[in-house]
Length: 454
Image (cartoon, rainbow, N blue to C red; front, side, top):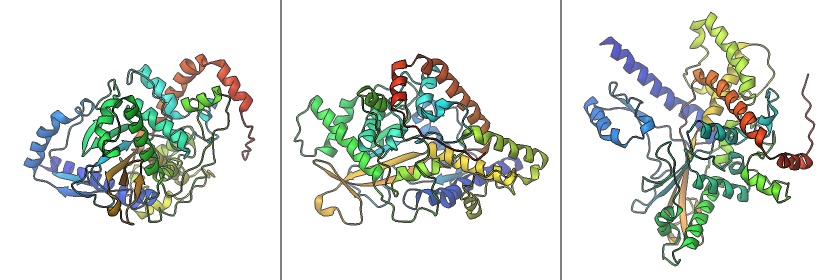
């Protein structure tokens, strides 16, 4: 009937948007090698129904209330990123794959921020407390995204070790496509490093030269962290990554006061936190650049969203002209390149900032996949990036996934959530924080005078 026909068209349109957005927008930010936008295919409905029944028991509980589309027959065909990427790995070789959701790697530098704490403690660290209070996780994680994005190996190692201790939703490890480590659900994930080390030992110590025992587990985890760090800092991308004018990374501060790594340093009387900066071609640098399109913070953005909303209430037919729901083509991308913050009161200015914020939200929620496969000395040709450990060498590929554009409609929710996170933190965490700690910070705070145009 016509209803299901229009539903099918709607689904096709939605999928087309996802593909176009990956192809015309995210590829420009991340570069050719990192983004796999997939393609749309049509499947026999009978096959789709059988597939749904078959995979239902495998789906995590939190996804089971989300219905799968069994009526349109349209689907997206994407590569299995746990298996390979930029080039074909030798088929018979085992493949190890690490998926990391790094979250937001900078502290807001916008003058629209109303609570001073947001200039000191990162969003992830604040949100942890609210999540634990709401029962989503049992314990707060020691992971702080600013440590991972610092480019400083010591801080990166600490961040990755923290992720391995408290994986939550931010880290998964696959071996030959099967999940061997990380949370299947929102419940308590007890990390068993010995079990993980058992899986990883053949990758890192193929000739079994190491005795078993805690030393072995620790060594293997250390090697894993080293390999992940090297892959995240490598520039495997040959192509120019778009002609993005970059947002200067020096804005805001390069560390978060709540980071466990940072607190340890302060306690030990060391106050200078090294931030080595990221190599320009690496995946973390590109992710951070896209995240930093959130130049106004949600607090500065929300009034602009309201301006667009008001305009749409008066002229609803303009929604498609303004490209709010696509099409995501070159014209859409071009508009994102305007980084000016001079608000001239127009809808056009407000809309550009809203769209940039949606890109930033997408980049704050994307995942990075690192696939590793052992290679022998003589196989490692010049074309492939290689990372070495004490006893092994790996070819690897890095990909970025979960790049669907965040919905325009989710902005009010983001605004509300931001307030909840900050208020909870101020009331329940900061109020109880060790006053000694904050005095230590005050003594060592570099004073920076920031002058704003009036």
